[in-house]
Length: 257
Length: 274
Image 1 (cartoon, rainbow over the protein chains, first blue to last red):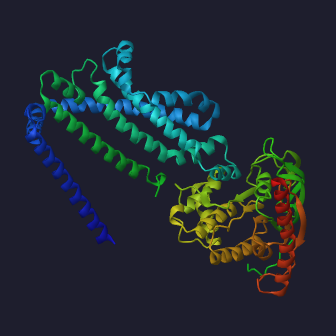
Image 2 (tube, each protein chain N blue to C red):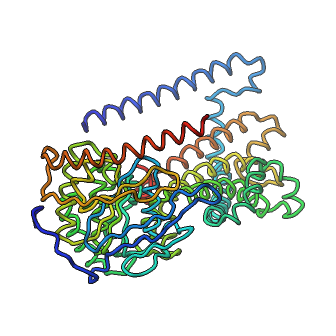
Image 3 (tube, chains in turn yellow, green):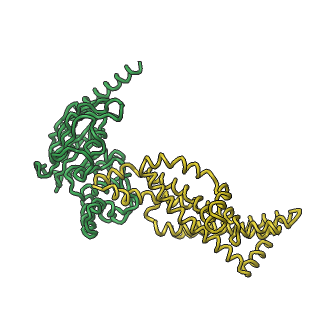
C-alpha cells in the first residue's frame, strides 16, 4: 500500500515536472516566432532579468512589500468576514439586511474602487490595504454564512437535548462545523488578494510586484512585466499550498476526511 | 444482565413517564398533522409507535423531545410539561448526522458531560464505560467518518446512555442499517434498556421490529389529522423470535390494522383526485 502511494507520488511529480518543461518549451517557441521579440520575451531572457533583479535586491523588496500588504488585508478582511458571516448565518434579520449588500459588493471588482480609494484614503498604504480587505471580506463572509446556516439540524437538536445554552451550541457545535467553510472562503479570498494586489499597487506606487509590472510598461521593458507575472503566479501557488498545509495540520479534525 | 431479565417497575423514581394529552399539531396554517392524540408511556416501559409512512410518527417524537410545540393539548414528561428540549429526554436520530464529525468517538460520547462541566478525567471514564456497554471498546479514538453505519448508531446510543437520562426517544434508529446489523442492535437495545430501566419511545414502520422490541405497540391512523388507533400489549416472553406462532399471530393482527389505515389513506387520496 505504502509502496503504491510512493509510486503514485513519484508519477505525479514526474507529470508535474514534464508539464512545466512543456509549457517553458512552448513559451520559448512562441517567443522565437514573435515578429518583435521585445514584445514577447523568452523564458531565458525573463529568467536573466529575474536573476539581475534578485542580485540588485529589488525583487526581494517588491515581493516583501506585496506580501506584507496581502497579509494585512487578508487577515483583517478574513476576521471581519468571519464575524459578519457568523452574524448573518446565526441571525435571520442580520442575514436579510446584509445579504443583498454582500452579493452586490462580491460581484464588484476591487479595480472599480481604485478612484474612490484614492480620494477617500489617499495614495499611501491605507488605500492599498483597504482594497485587499474589500476583496477578502465578502467572500469569507458568504462562505462562513453558508457554513453556519448549514449546520445539520440534528447536530443542533442533539446539543439542545444535552442542555447546551445558545452560547455553548455556538462554540461547541456551530463554530467547529463551520471551519471547512471558513477555510474555503479564506482560500478563495487569498486568490482574490493576488489578483487585487496588482490593481492596488497602481496607486502611486514605490514598491511591490504590481509596481514592477506596471513600471515595465513605461520603459517598454516587457521582460520586467513577465518577471512580475511569473513571480506573482508562483507566490500565489506557493502560498495556497502552504495555507492548505498549515490548515490541514492545525485544523485537521475539522476538515472533511 | 441478559435479555431474559424481567422488567422491574421502577415507578416515579426514574421520572420516566410520558403523557401525551389531546395533542393537535399543525405546521403554520397547514392541515393538522396530529389531532386529539393521546397516549401514556409508563416509566421503564418500551413503547413502540407504529404507523404508515407520513402519519406523523416523527412529529410525535419532536413534540415529546421539545423540538416542536403542540398547537393544542399538552405533552408531559417526568411529571412536567414539556416546553423545551432537555437532558431528561435524549433523542437517538435515524441518521448519524447528529454525531460531531470533528470529535472522536470518545469525545462525541463525552459531549453531554462536557456541557455539564464534568471534569475531563471523569468524562473519559464515563465515556469509555458507555462505549464498552454498546460494544465499541477499541474504537474510542476513531472519528465518525471512519465508522460503519451500525457503529455510528452504537455511538449515538452510548452518547444517550452516558447522561443517565430516564427517557430515550428513538426515531427509526436502525432503518438505514443492513438486516444483520439491525438484528444484532435490536437484541442489544433490549438488553440495555431492560438492564438500565430506561423508558424508551421507539418509532418504526417495521412491524417485526415493533413486536421484537416493544412492551406495547401504539398503532397510528393514516394522516393527516392522525391519532392513536389502538395500543396492543406485547406479552411474549423475551428473547422473542420471529418464527414463533404467537409472533406470527401478533404480526398478522398489527399488519391487518395498519393495512386498514393504508387503504383508508388511499381512498382519501382517490376522492381528492376525482
